[in-house]
Amino acid sequence: MEKGEINFFSENDFVLEQESSFRKWIEAVIASEEKFVGDINYIFCDDEYLHKINVEYLSHDTYTDIISFDNTIGNTLHGDIFISTERVAENAAGFEVDFQEELKRVMIHGILHFCGFMDKTEREKVIMRRKEEEKIELFHVEQ
Image (tube, rainbow, N blue to C red; front, top):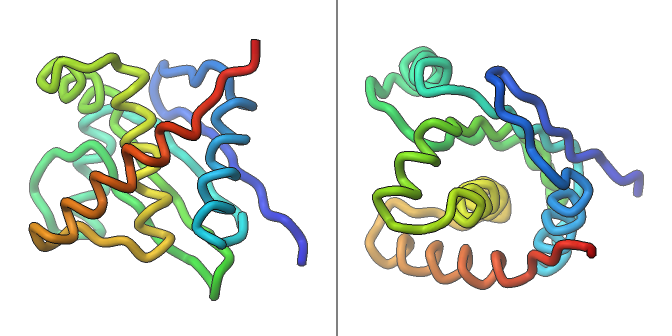
């Protein structure tokens, strides 16, 4: 099976530092769920950009930190994950956590959706949060 690619794009001035560390981490998370890496695109943007997508494609007139479009085929994860870095920064401040920590949580949240985890019910939210914490622990920065 041919391995896909994890790509990072920015529609604002955000630059993801240590792309290779993030890519390896995401690959490790996917493997830990016994799934395979397909083509996954992260698109970093601002609140207005993501709000337009939310209204146009999901009919939700709200601001959000992440929208993921899942194109997974079998056990191979494919999809686009849009992340508002503005919202991530605001949420990080609100939760009193580091921006990088909140960014990791949101980035892996999209992958967990592609793996089949949902967050509609309270029970699903608890499981999703536990999975996010577990997967953040897998992140290692090369020295």
